[in-house]
Image (cartoon, rainbow, N blue to C red; front, side, top):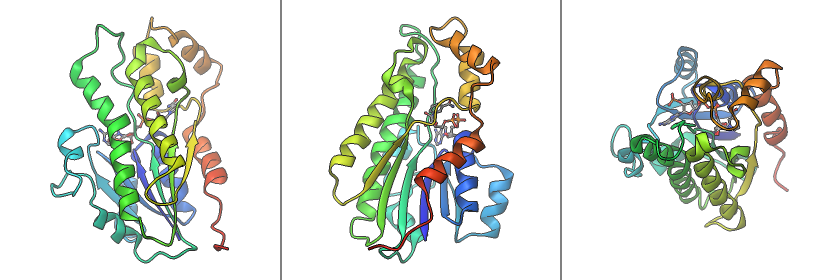
Length: 249
Ligand SMILES: NC(=O)c1ccc[n+]([C@@H]2O[C@H](COP(=O)([O-])OP(=O)(O)OC[C@H]3O[C@@H](n4cnc5c(N)ncnc54)[C@H](OP(=O)(O)O)[C@@H]3O)[C@@H](O)[C@H]2O)c1
C-alpha cells in the first residue's frame, strides 16, 4: 500500500495529484485550508483511504503547535501514523510538499510585511517542520519513506515581482536537498519542477503582475497555449514518480 500526505490538495496541481493518486489506489491525506465538495464526498465515502485535514500552513499558531493540540495545528505524529496503519517493507509512505503561494506580488520596497511572513511560513517553514515531523513519526517504520518536493524554476531565476516566492522556493528546495544527503532515517527525495501550469497561482501572476519583469513572457506563453493543464501534469508526475509498488528485495 502507498500512503501519501499531500499539502495544497484543494486546487491546482495539488487537487489534480490528489485525484490521480487516489484513483491509482493510494491512500491520500490532503492538507489545505479548504476542500472541494467532490473531495468531501469522497472522504465521507472512503474514510480509511481518503482524508482531508484542514490546516493553515501560513499561520504561526499552526506551525508552533506541532503536537496538533489545537484543532488547526499541524497533524500530530500519532495522526499521521494512524492514517498509515500497519506498514511493512513492501509499503511506501510519501510526503508531498505542494502547497505554496506566489503572494505578495510586488517589488521590494512595496511588500506588505504580513503577506511576506505568511509566504515564508507556507513556502519555507511548513516544509521544514512537516519534513521533520514526518521523518520523526516514521523513523522506525520498515516501509519505504519518501519526500517529494514540488519545485519551481523561479527558485533559480530572478523575478523581481515575485521575489519572496523565488526566495522561499529556493530555501525549501535547499532544505530537501540537504535531507536527501542525510536524515534521521533513510528516505528518498525527489525534487520535481512541474513547469508552468494553468492554476490560480499562474492566473494571479498573469492578472496582477502587469509591468513586472517576466510578466510579458507569461502572458505570451498563455497566448500561445504553452501552459500545462493540471491534470496532464499530475498524470505525468504520477506515472514517473509513483509507479506501481514493487515488492522489496
Ligand atoms: N502554477 C505554476 O505555473 C507553477 C509552476 C512551477 C511550480 N509550481 C508549484 O506547484 C505547486 C502548486 O502550485 P499551484 O499553481 O497548484 O498553486 P495554487 O493553484 O495556488 O494552489 C495552492 C494550493 O496550496 C494551498 N494553500 C495555499 N495557502 C495555504 C495555507 N495557508 N495553508 C495550507 N494550504 C494552503 C491551497 O489550498 P487552500 O487555499 O484551500 O488552503 C491550494 O490547494 C507549488 O509548489 C508551486 O510552487 C507551480
